[in-house]
Length: 196
Image 1 (cartoon, rainbow, N blue to C red):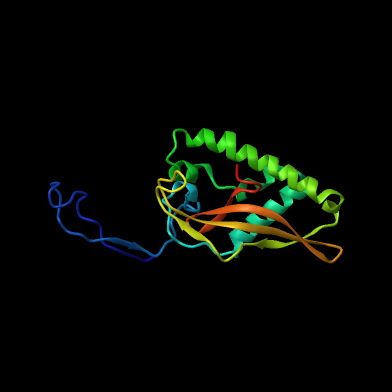
Image 2 (image 1 turned 120 degrees about the vertical axis):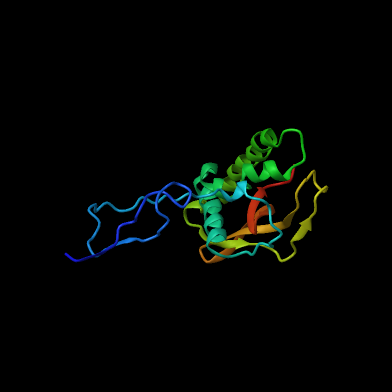
């Protein structure tokens, strides 16, 4: 096999005592190893990133996936299904200027959210088995809540009065979603039932 080769004359650079020439070795042969290169993929949790002022829209893959998870949780009476729809803890820790946002998130917000999932399931009653999800409607009246309001150290978009929409035997119905707030241009539930 032909090699167009010129050896690198010296392994040190100009200050390392070897030759300062920068010739390279070029080969037409495939490398001796057939192992694929190792790649590392890291996924960064968006809740750990800084807040943005991007106004969320009620659509898109992430929104639709979270809305469906919320609906599935209500139908199944299983709050754990709706975890992706709820405002993330790491974001809440960044947003709130209160003594212990972690405790508040776990002991107040999540507890209320779980209770509200059970309440909405009871409202569906016998219709849970035959109800068909049609979407999450978010009114076009979101407001920008600035730092210093609502015990915040960071701002966010907030909207009241969204609805989880469905049909039963072709009749349109809805369940209330009290409050959504934004993180990095995405809507998340923070109060599903009454704000308390």
